[in-house]
View 1 (tube, rainbow, N blue to C red):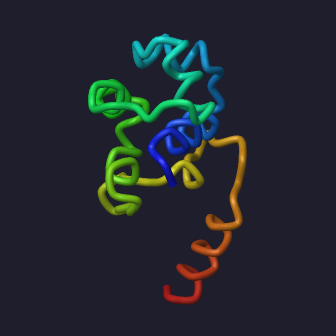
View 2: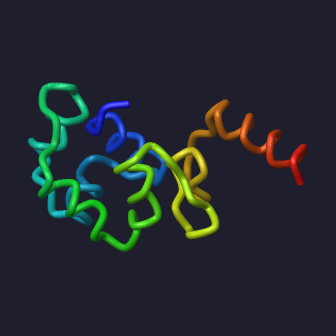
Length: 101
Protein backbone atom coordinates (compact mmCIF):
# COMPACT_ATOMS: atom_id res chain seq x y z
CA UNK A 1 0.00 0.00 0.00
CA UNK A 2 1.31 3.43 -0.91
CA UNK A 3 1.93 6.00 1.79
CA UNK A 4 -0.81 8.21 0.36
CA UNK A 5 -3.29 5.34 0.66
CA UNK A 6 -2.20 4.73 4.24
CA UNK A 7 -2.85 8.36 5.14
CA UNK A 8 -6.36 8.10 3.75
CA UNK A 9 -6.92 4.83 5.64
CA UNK A 10 -5.88 6.49 8.90
CA UNK A 11 -8.13 9.47 8.33
CA UNK A 12 -11.13 7.29 7.47
CA UNK A 13 -10.51 4.92 10.39
CA UNK A 14 -10.66 7.89 12.74
CA UNK A 15 -13.84 9.14 11.07
CA UNK A 16 -12.30 12.51 10.18
CA UNK A 17 -13.04 14.80 7.29
CA UNK A 18 -10.11 16.02 5.24
CA UNK A 19 -10.50 19.47 6.78
CA UNK A 20 -10.44 18.15 10.34
CA UNK A 21 -7.46 15.90 9.59
CA UNK A 22 -5.59 18.90 8.20
CA UNK A 23 -6.42 21.05 11.22
CA UNK A 24 -5.13 18.33 13.55
CA UNK A 25 -1.92 17.59 11.63
CA UNK A 26 -1.12 20.96 10.10
CA UNK A 27 -0.96 19.47 6.61
CA UNK A 28 -2.34 21.77 3.91
CA UNK A 29 -5.72 20.66 2.57
CA UNK A 30 -4.49 20.91 -1.01
CA UNK A 31 -1.57 18.60 -0.17
CA UNK A 32 -3.85 16.06 1.50
CA UNK A 33 -6.17 16.08 -1.50
CA UNK A 34 -3.18 15.45 -3.77
CA UNK A 35 -2.02 12.54 -1.59
CA UNK A 36 -5.43 10.94 -1.30
CA UNK A 37 -6.15 11.47 -4.98
CA UNK A 38 -2.96 9.65 -5.92
CA UNK A 39 -1.42 12.72 -7.54
CA UNK A 40 1.50 12.96 -5.12
CA UNK A 41 3.30 10.95 -2.46
CA UNK A 42 4.04 12.69 0.83
CA UNK A 43 7.60 13.46 1.85
CA UNK A 44 9.09 13.10 5.30
CA UNK A 45 7.62 16.31 6.74
CA UNK A 46 3.93 15.38 6.33
CA UNK A 47 4.64 11.90 7.66
CA UNK A 48 6.25 13.42 10.75
CA UNK A 49 3.30 15.76 11.15
CA UNK A 50 1.02 12.73 11.28
CA UNK A 51 3.16 10.52 13.52
CA UNK A 52 3.87 13.38 15.93
CA UNK A 53 0.14 13.94 16.46
CA UNK A 54 -0.95 12.07 19.59
CA UNK A 55 -4.18 10.81 17.99
CA UNK A 56 -2.20 9.08 15.24
CA UNK A 57 0.86 7.83 17.17
CA UNK A 58 -0.72 4.37 17.34
CA UNK A 59 -0.28 4.03 13.57
CA UNK A 60 3.43 5.00 13.38
CA UNK A 61 4.87 1.48 13.12
CA UNK A 62 2.30 0.40 10.55
CA UNK A 63 2.72 3.59 8.55
CA UNK A 64 6.47 3.08 8.32
CA UNK A 65 6.75 -0.72 8.05
CA UNK A 66 3.33 -2.27 7.17
CA UNK A 67 3.59 -4.20 10.44
CA UNK A 68 1.72 -3.92 13.73
CA UNK A 69 2.78 -4.37 17.34
CA UNK A 70 -0.44 -4.43 19.35
CA UNK A 71 1.49 -5.19 22.54
CA UNK A 72 3.21 -1.82 22.09
CA UNK A 73 -0.02 -0.03 21.15
CA UNK A 74 0.91 0.04 17.46
CA UNK A 75 -2.03 -0.88 15.24
CA UNK A 76 -3.24 -0.50 11.68
CA UNK A 77 -6.36 1.54 10.87
CA UNK A 78 -8.62 -1.50 10.66
CA UNK A 79 -7.96 -2.10 14.39
CA UNK A 80 -8.83 1.42 15.47
CA UNK A 81 -11.51 1.41 18.14
CA UNK A 82 -12.99 4.58 16.69
CA UNK A 83 -12.85 3.33 13.10
CA UNK A 84 -16.02 3.52 11.10
CA UNK A 85 -15.11 0.75 8.70
CA UNK A 86 -14.20 -2.83 9.54
CA UNK A 87 -12.10 -4.71 7.04
CA UNK A 88 -12.02 -8.41 6.27
CA UNK A 89 -8.41 -8.34 7.39
CA UNK A 90 -9.49 -7.40 10.91
CA UNK A 91 -11.98 -10.26 10.99
CA UNK A 92 -9.36 -12.69 9.72
CA UNK A 93 -6.83 -11.62 12.35
CA UNK A 94 -9.46 -11.80 15.08
CA UNK A 95 -10.25 -15.39 14.05
CA UNK A 96 -6.56 -16.25 13.94
CA UNK A 97 -5.90 -14.87 17.43
CA UNK A 98 -8.95 -16.70 18.81
CA UNK A 99 -7.67 -20.00 17.42
CA UNK A 100 -4.13 -19.39 18.69
CA UNK A 101 -5.14 -18.27 22.18
